[in-house]
Image (cartoon, rainbow, N blue to C red):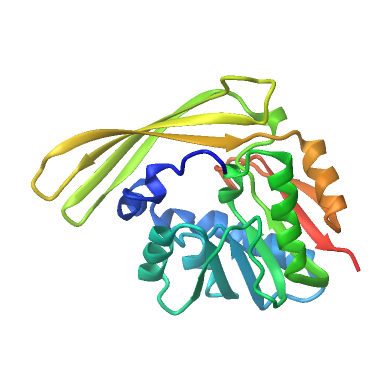
Length: 247
């Protein structure tokens, strides 16, 4: 997260829901709900989401949990408030935020992808653990573990009121010997006047072996298991880490 913030979370944030629409998250949000519920002794009531972004998952999970949403981008928090006006939003960095309260569960979706060093990954896990009592549960959803990463391209986008966005994503690894990979996005943006322009946006993301995840989770005070997803469950990631806080 020492890399420059992608424009998608800054000056282009108000286009975010045209790149990835909230309604597309219903199926995967249900998977996250199930995993958190099954990992706990009792169904969680209060859930802290670290790196909540535009609030897409929260728009579905709020029917089941009392959510507190944390993100470091003011623009993304404002976007999430427009979608989830009744939820509590807090600006903070997942590596260091401390709310001085505990929750039944902590959820960290793909914002964890922007953690690019083992030190920062350990710090994020420590944040999650600090907000859980004994027996609390956590779910980490990285885009990839290094064993499962392959270069690829993707495309998509949505139409909105008067505007539209289409994108091409190219994910690749410039240096397989480090802990990052790159996703280069080309956005085609069409405004209300029908003008279209293209923007390049680079996302530098973390990429860690499965063993690193499990070792750091144990050091942070978690008992963890790996949940391997399938394409019909959660297309964004292949392996999720379902965790329980040790006493």
